Length: 201
Image (tube, rainbow, N blue to C red; front, side, top):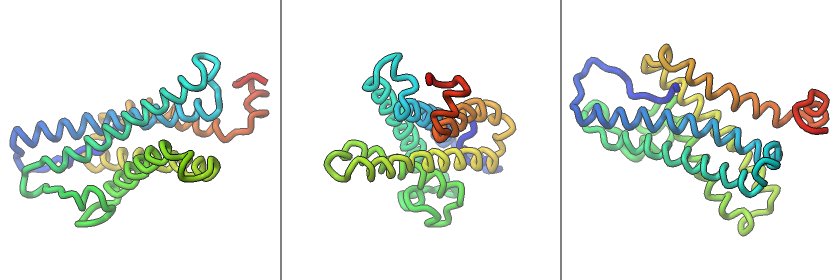
């Protein structure tokens, strides 16, 4: 799966940094996978398309678990950069939390904004009954589509910039295609879906 991978350079890296890079790569790939699964299951939870199988609370609970994994692996991916020791690749907290700060790139900014937006959505999900009305909360929660889009863009741009796209593109598309399809179907009117036989009429 395409994810942000550290750039391959001619500099020889220490075995320690090589291990940190592997953690960053694996966590980024898992964050990509879980972000796509989260958006798919979120659509299922919102529409009730699979609610009959296990009940609405179970579907919402699964969505919460997937979102938690997405955020956890995204944070682990970012935190791994703080552990690099090579002098030419130092990442500080500012570079990892403020888009375009300290010489950051657009692809890094997409990942930073996407992850921070996912964290904000997760925090407000727990406070929705206390802070804002349901409709306002729902509008903010729907920014999750934008957040996942930014994470996906970050992933593909990172894989391309680091020369891994030719190896990872098929796996990345395999995970992304169902997420995009379900998101598109989410906004198709119910009567159209029913006439096509995709949902019960």
